[in-house]
Length: 499
Image 1: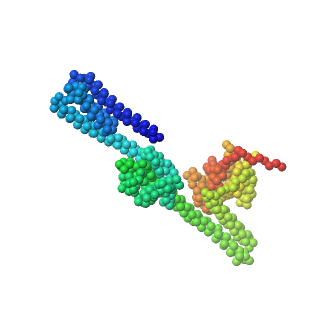
Image 2: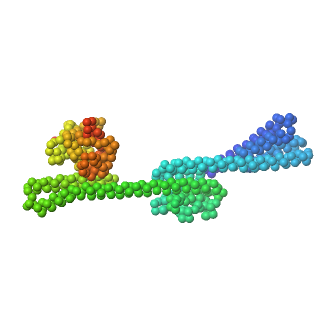
Image 3: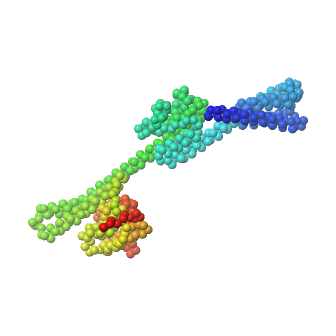
């Protein structure tokens, strides 16, 4: 590798000095073409042009060589006596000396202009890189993405070994074991002193690298090591600091975003908890009071009450206790299904058996047999939790019985590899603007004046989502609502058991 680098350097030097020779030969050839037609001053201008072109395209060494070579060639080929380095008159000597001084000044100014142009172009490139990095960081959401963008940005500007290290939440650098012994001291010291270390900084000038901390609002977010470092490259050091500042701001923004999201989730949890407690205290108070009152009357006035009054009080206790049982079950299931860590055990189940179990449980609430079920034979099995599915259908039918006094249709069908279970009633219906809100916890369609905690439909949708299905509602033509549960059907059905 070292031999290849030496060969490349020698080849580049030959090209530069060859360009100087080409410029001088070109100026000399042009002067010979116009020799005898113009004055020596006009011929000298071609050599000045060669000096300007050399100074703008090559380094200061080649520029000075071009200036000296131009005066020498002009004196040798065109200033009398020709083909010699002698000068006939003092005026010609002054002319040649002035030409040399002008050529050197032009070389110096042109080389300086070229350096400034290159510096401006390089600074524009760095500014463009900072702009692109800032735009890219604005759309990142994870420290890993920020780290990748930062490492790429450093590698695209600095040719040496660039190491970017982020801090753990406890403020300590997350160093790999291979780097811990060689870079840890410099990176830790730069973070501790909150300053850049290395050549040109006045801190640890004997190092061959810059150690740049990544700090934001007094928090340690990481550090970068850039090798090799040049003490005279102030612009490069400042660019490295600008890159690390952008990365630190992005990391701090990401941490703030996570903190804000956590705070919002906590606020939502507190709000849900407060709403839950308010709903529970409101909806439990009345039935509990009814149960306690009826039980107390039976206990203290049993002998004074007629048989009919005793039956009425016992019926009241049963109804209120059933209501409390339903609200409690819905509440527990909603909390359970809202937990991200809660797993649901599902097995192959028959829809016909689930529907039959629900209808058998609701017979006491439906003495008039208003629920009409249509379940075709030969339906495929579904992967489901039978207890949850029974609760879902039970809640839908309970709502239909509560809000409607007409016939209720329970229809099961199969369409597009989905199992559809629809509960249709002729109640007051749900307005279009409430069809989404009705599935939120503690939200109810209160037009009928029926009591309830507003948890039934929220639990139904949570159960449907947990099974990979959907639950939707639409208004029926002629009045009423139609709730439709859509469940996926697994194409790989279990084989029938052999008798």
